[in-house]
Length: 407
Image (cartoon, rainbow, N blue to C red; front, side, top):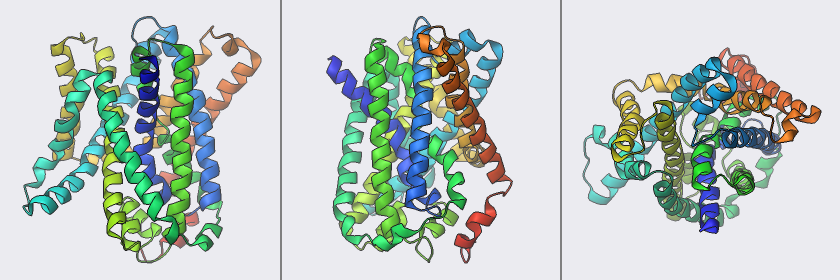
């Protein structure tokens, strides 16, 4: 059973991490090129692993089954609790809404293809919560079972793509290097390693076994890094930066990388694999995010873990994002535009500040422990600054040459 839980924990960490990053990272990082982007991915992985270990140690230091609210309140006081509430809800509700919105066209295309009948568009946002809401209700065990199936689908579709795509790689495309746009990768790169939200659920699931939990975080986050690097090499070796069907075009249109990939590689199996990959990538991230949001709400509102309490938590998890997707999606899109800043505050700055207050493990009280924590805090502030500079147009000169004829 312990081994079973360990594997389930690794898959939950990987599944929560992989989804959005696989679809978005090649587009955001295309202008920099393969070498600068993989270097940025590695820096993001190291930083997020450090903050995840901070998060884990704080979680284990608090009695009971605490989530972020309880952890921040006990270690940082009222200001930490207040910031955590606001940023957590903004981030996870916006991510949930984004996954629901992104799944709608996939369901629409699949149903139309199978039945040759077009059903009303307003129905599609309800499909993802309806299919997987039961797993969130059951908690970590329910999500673990569903996630294993979805991760298997993600793995099979990914293997299908990497089996078919290498023959289409043009190695001269890998030669492109431009360090100028490399900084704009950081906010999305950080967000693509944002698995911390699943840690409180995993801590309970794995009976607070510190050593096994640390290995789960290391392995579960290392797998996405390897997948990102391989996926980056394939995509940037097949899809050109410029052109009618290109990564620059995908950037301007706001579409996932699988669309230009399927268009350029004229293969039915690649098209099928790309659509399945998109679906499973969205679902695996959706499962981790909604489970974490549900557990957060249970902790924050002190909801009893009865069937009524679980049902209330599910309603609080799914109803707000559904309302916004159906009525005012732009509100969540605005929140998503600052996702890197939200993640930097919530999953890097707050865990580092909480770790600063820890007395055990002893490492946190040593000189080098303080140096590591301070470095992580400064990196979080750097990401926030990058996000703000990007919104102010500071990086436009570095990417505008690639967007000519697309804007």
